[in-house]
Image (cartoon, helix red, strand yellow):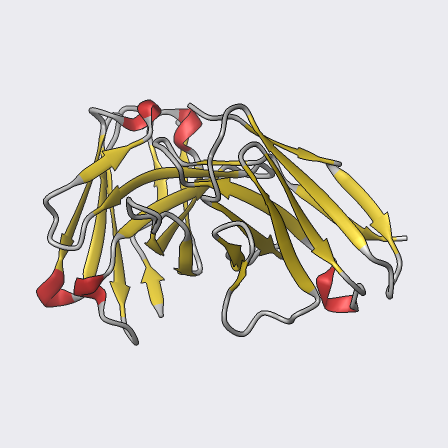
Length: 107
Length: 119
């Protein structure tokens, strides 16, 4: 299985900051990568698919980039609603796998 | 909308069947999946099923124990879980998507249902 590793595991930031989360795959997944946001007690919410395509309804401050084995999720200007846990997921090959998550905390 | 039910407490070695009822989108045209999350842990894809039920895939840890199925006439997805183990304890999410050929992301999720395996 392809292993997905996110960094950092925890990130402290302030409203208005620009933040970047990195996701690395143990082997190439092409552009078959998605990003999700999850708040406590809630289901995940799709943000980005195919590495850089913004899901309908997701604010444009979220963006994704990368291909192959290295990917990033960037939030251009943090809003209070953005403090949550973020997961990447590869869907290049079975078994589909997720990163361990990055918890974005208020500084 | 996706609504799961059927969760609860079950003893190790026991069985449970989770239904998920879909509305608001064309269920019969969608790959469907189950994703789980152990308490305080990350997400794990469990299984998926093609639109007509002809293809099914499972994570290795549940192969031979779990069966995914669907009834397009009832807009329903199911997960039959047998020989349950403590490590199957998790919130189980029903999700649309998770298909092959570039469609493997999950665009709609249910609220999740907790399954606890314990004696």
